[in-house]
Image (cartoon, rainbow, N blue to C red; front, side):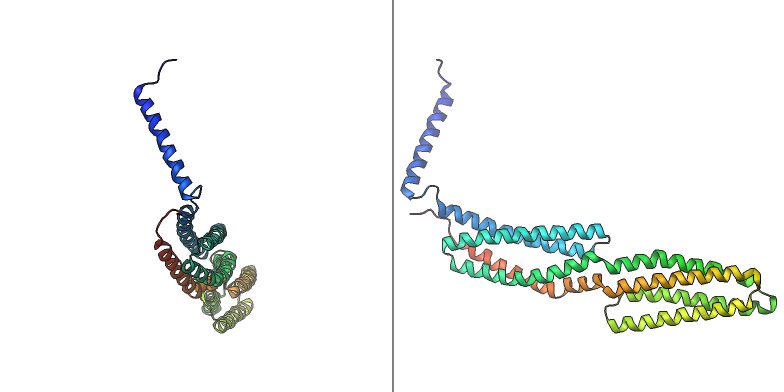
Length: 300
């Protein structure tokens, strides 16, 4: 058989020598493989991954709160839940290693994180549940679409009335149309404030204002019915139908706005949840510092 090239032969001999040395080292250490060194490396890896996953989960939860569609909000919320699951798996694995290594200070730091994280998860769950409902966002869309359409139809119907009125009644008809239009527009303006409001009492006041505006518009329509000739009767009916649609959608908007899930989730994210996040991050920093103090060493 032909001999292998000389350089390859020397490399093979060197590799065999390295294996022999490694075997002697392992036999002298009394452990195969070196479990302490392996545990130390894995502990640091898990500690680092916990921080990464915690940050990813917190950021995903914030995206869920700020998302402008149901799909984006749900996807971000799922990302947050997935990251939290990885945090919990890493914590469980790290706890076993730290106990095996008998790292008392590290265990205390991990326990402090677990304590803060348990509280964080409760608020995070509430925040995500609220965020994915998107009731304020849905109310806003209804205000910008269905409600806006009803107001546009209302104004369009009223715009035809002054020219149909008798000359003696034209000024009064114009004034009544303007009053009715202003009342409908005020409902729409109050809707925007209601959607953004977080206080129940303030919302109750706004709802009373919208009820008064609807009543004012209907009062104007009733007087217009008496003033305009038969040729304008259909326009008054169209205006009344549009006002009825506005009232129906406004009730839906108020109901969604009352749930206030986007406002409440944002308040949680910026308030109590943010405070707990800082406490969790402080505990993780303490854990990282504690893990970094241990030297990598083999079992003797």
